Length: 348
Image 1 (cartoon, rainbow, N blue to C red):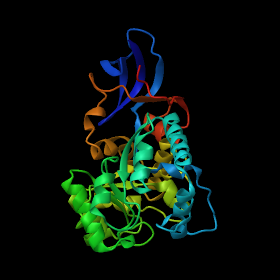
Image 2 (image 1 turned 30 degrees about the vertical axis):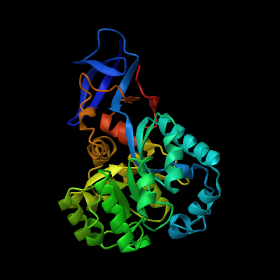
Image 3 (image 1 turned 90 degrees about the vertical axis):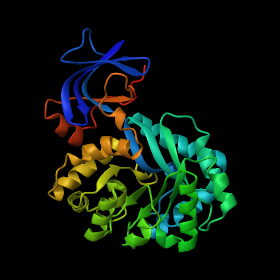
Image 4 (image 1 turned 120 degrees about the vertical axis):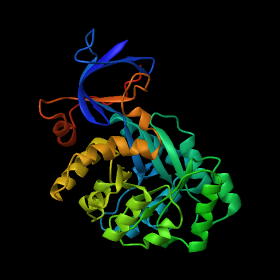
């Protein structure tokens, strides 16, 4: 058996103690020091779950002169043109590189909005983790074809599309209904650079939303009332010239989860994303520790993995250890988390 010890994060905050690990599972928990020298000591957290990525973007070459829509909007944005010109081997190599980046910073799972239709989803499915993907595929174009979607759902876990403004309403409604009938999640980008009709979005009965940077306060309250999680991606938003209104979201009662978005402008490092969110919250006079729940608790709620967070006996040993620098562990984790003793997941 191997032990880790220190400040251990659970759903109610930190406790000082230790965990005993054997064969990929937590087999012992306790207060204070373990019975033998721990292999790691510091701030111990569950692994990260990156709730929004586009992993094929890792090899997209940016044009910094272009605005958001010309960079990422389907079907003719720079990203989509470059992805369309890549062969399958190149796309797989790009995805693998993105996955390796996430693994190095302690990510065990990621939710990817996979472009490229059935072939794009199948390419990601062919890559072995960790980290393990939750593949939110989409049709190759911006129209609904029942047979295409049926084939697509054989290689993905759900449907994740761009904004409602990119689609004809009847096509998007049919796509969302198809996903629901198949028992799969349906999600979409909402009010990223400009506000979109929240009632049109909610009528699709999505499983979760992404962004909401340009949403009104009333929109935020509607989403909170519906109990929907919203994935925020602060570093990517800031790169695109958008400031996510995190304090307003929190005040509205929204459940926020954290993602890194496009690999062409972010490296997939959830430590950096968590710190960026915490700093933005402070700048907006809100509680910076909300970034902890967005990084660790909300992603597990979104994927129905709440049982992992207590890090209790019998749970999986997907853990990350951060160096404790003597400050409040919350401050060390949120603002000085680059000091990581080991980012590889502790599974042995």
